Image (cartoon, rainbow, N blue to C red; front, side):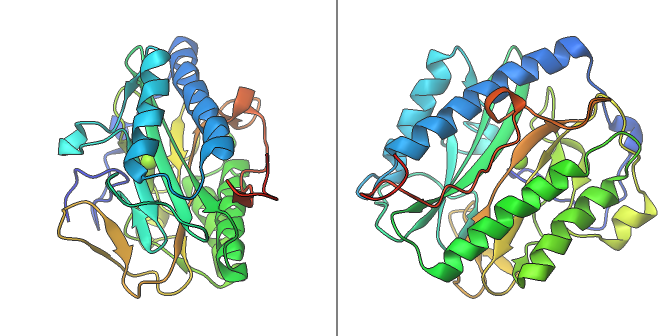
Length: 288
Ligand code: MG
């Protein structure tokens, strides 16, 4: 496994918490502007995604919006990743490369996107149901979105990183889904991936070195839940991660600022706490 991937993990490594950076109000303002570009992209995708689009067309549309906002895509060229979004369909967990694959009715399609504004990153992901998905898949996506919200609610000054991990894990376990362990959330700022790692379960390691959350910490929280096994494997393209059993996976992510006023989700419209699992998009009878 390599360090250099989008949503990384250093297995078994103790983290140097002295490398954690706490952002000033000025820095957070820059991250907020990057986050708001992502919020607008998700708004656009909710009404634009439909069966028949290729994942490359989605990538081009998103990159156009980033450039128009005078931002830069965080992922393009990152360790050689060739695109502006990660496009992961059904059994693909993360890091899918946009290409000729056409979305079809019943797909669960995850778009993960990072934006840089004035040198600062924001990073977020949504899973979209392309038309009607099966009830199991809808339940999976709903639980993953709720787990993200639970993790966000635990992001309070004085709480610990393990409280965030536990909140996410509890939703996944209660719903009975596989919780991906191999890929985790992360600190974020002038680099896309900064310490600390933010796992989606309470690992032994996190308890040994449990960080107290302080004002100015900014983290990307990103639960990935699977219908079946939590185990994953990487395809020969060197990027795409799929479930080991070929069953569906869902992924939701937001960038969150820890502040004295509680968590601020900078990748949602104006930091508002809103429902993020939309149900079906892109067909008649779906959300307009
Ligand atoms: Mg991320």
